[in-house]
Length: 620
Image (cartoon, rainbow, N blue to C red; front, side):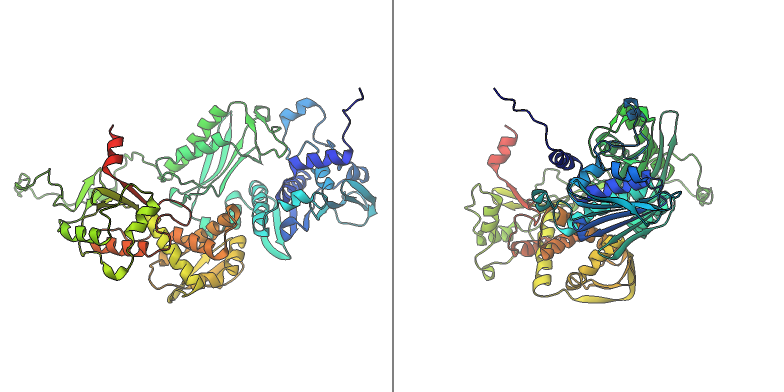
């Protein structure tokens, strides 16, 4: 029987290795930026065209390479970082495996120019698909310039899996952030399609965060500093009120390397547990320094996942450091034993004033078993937990239900139930002026439907209403703009500013008149005439832009649908509380006039109901 095991050709082996290391243009950006940092550069430029499809070029002023090293660096497992296996446990550099350049050269056209300061001439190496085309001397500046062109030109299947330019550029920017944040003492520049996106001079960490994410972070950041014999923890955390639902602006570094470590991330979030709503995520920029022998960075080819020798101990240190910062900045509950001077100035009771015992008034006619309580609000634990409306005549409500023909409603899906609630002709019915309803908190509206109870999730209902209003504004009738007497200036990141500039017409149709002042600042000259948003414009605009970007990344949403949904989500919680029958009536009218009143645009349920049969099942 003949042998069947054969060695793979070098080109095929390189392409397989490239599939592990290079997944998209951002992967190339990561490897090239890290190489520039390892080379001792103080100025690093990243030039990108077509989100990296056409060109990714990194230029640095580092120490450069010799003539022979310039060629040898493209061989697999060729590295200057390791000599023996034990060196893996003393890693201080970004790269060490010697796979990055070999993987990149296997799937792209690569041109490397490099020169050492002590040499009179430099070296240029040209490679196409792992095949060296030229290797010769040339005139070039000190340092290294490496250009990667036509990525995945010989792997069309991988190229076809790339997303839109906006999505791929988002990944490129994220890799840029990760390197630029931790190496804030270096100068970084990012150019895309000939435009300057970022120009970051050397600075401290706080200023680098502000330069990347905008001036809105200037007053959000508080330092984290904790040093011990085991671990040093430094960085910044953001105020709890600036937490978001998505995991953005969360950066954890270990020994100057960006890492994803679920346990350490959980440690930070646990420190905020009592300070932010459930489902929200705090922003943080934290660097952890440990003995390299206690961390294994050789877990994956991308070196983002790491293993820690004692991760539970580090969990405790990180959580304690963040809690200490929160407590120091008076963001978490703490006991203050210092008497405020204002209390010493409080007037004293005159000595001749008689002491009057307090009395308690009560209603002798109060019946706790009354099915429709007389009171309008009940306080529980100092918060508004439940709310009933005033006693009303329920006959009007029953007539309304009969007009909707709901007495025959049997157990149905929410979509069918809503269909039965919507009359065939609106002119045949009207909501009564007053009817019984029950509010639990600010989210849940309970309505009685004969022998059934309908529950409406109010924020979800408002999201559907606002979404359809926004779509109508974008497609048919723009919302009227109320001109601002004193325009508000919002500060954006360069990436947010580019997106805002491309969406100016859509913002205008929804009532926001934006005017670009410079590369990162916009003036809001007008707002929707029916909304009070003056004080929140910075957060509203940036949140809409961030959500738009995320939606484009997660779903290939239509531009109009995307921005309509983002705006609806921002304002679903900014509506007044439902406290009167008129307000509830208006909400129902608007909801059941929507094309799809049962689910939100993001496919969350709006309506649920209970009947005696389903309730009995709960107590069986």
